[in-house]
Image (tube, rainbow, N blue to C red; front, side, top):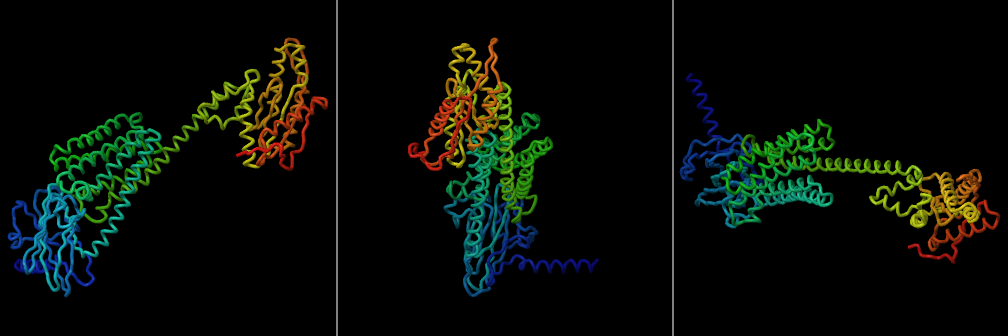
Length: 610
């Protein structure tokens, strides 16, 4: 037994003699930075009344086993001790950094041979009177050559006591801080751009889910800005109690808006009403904390809002899983985004609670999670847009089917105008451009399409062909058999012409009286003549029967085709077709007349197409 006691005593002496070495910071030639955590001495003062003199004589220091000091919620005061040794002959300019803006009071005592220096900073100290005006708590000090100093940090805070402590050379800190500022600027810019993007999306389509998501990113941006100490420096430098409340407000909004976003975009109310009530209730509790943040004690508010944040993440994640199992398409991206964001936020919350230790990865877990969430929500948004496009296409198809059903006799014409069905006023437009007797397009309808086809042919350098038709001896038919019989002839003539024109882009219209016109875009003269001969043949084969009378109709057709060029008047085709129709009449009727297209521009038809 005696031997065991001697062994334990020997080990304790070895450990005790090594403590100064573990806590010592040596400023060698290549020194730039030292993180104070594992192996550094600390002491918990539960009374909060011990002075520097008391601490200097204290022997019961503890050796930290944490990478970063993290003590959770506590009212104790914590002392941290280290020794800085400058073995070089020159002076060293240093910075003591505490990278946690929400610590209420940080006092640094620097014990040197010539005396004791004391510095005070912290969240309860106005930024204008801190040793350095910075988003982090920084204390500059110098150490002469071949000199050492004992550093005693006294830390007190109402919230979570987390002390990420570092010693830097001032040059190295400036370089690190510059890079860190760029990285934070990129991250904050990402949050701001996402929130603005979703807000403008809301303004364009008036979908409430996008407003909720935009506000979520704004509140999340506010929370991150607050956690990095920016408001107390730039917004209220002389007020020490607003930053804590501002954080509670931002977190409260960051609970409410994502709940409302998921409630809307995943259609929770219609599909899972019970879950919807729980989700909405949790979000409203977060909103209530926004109002209560300025009335409840800070510690109580912080604990409540952190508990609500955990429950909100859990509830939302359950909703994502349920809707994913329901095979709701956007839920798969929401589930992945919720997974990454939840993991990052859970780690951050547990660090604040002191459940897990603090490190670079755990400190930045929420940044990584939110960045992944932003990427995945871009995919979710794309999925939602595709669903809307599919719904629009389905609606258009239903409209097309309805029009085809009610207008069976104009089926070919409807197919020729499918591109116009995308316009909401198609039905009214068609009613105003339809000939009441033949159900063909009227002159106005033809003029509009003809002008479009002519300019399209000019742009594409493709042929535009016209067939101008006239029923032979129609005045004699009217005078002999009456106008009703003449109307029946016009109706039958329209059917004959339509039966010979099959392409959707081709147009048949009543030009006036007994004249009809056929517009054939992207059709050469040979193709147009072929269709004209087909129409003449169809009239020769058919007879008209009406009230006991029976006749055979014939038609004369003028065919013209041209590739539009700059300076050619669009009236050229109509004038030319009319002349050729007149020639067909003169040459015996019941025939087709055409001429090859001009090889050179005709000066008499010059007109600027622009």
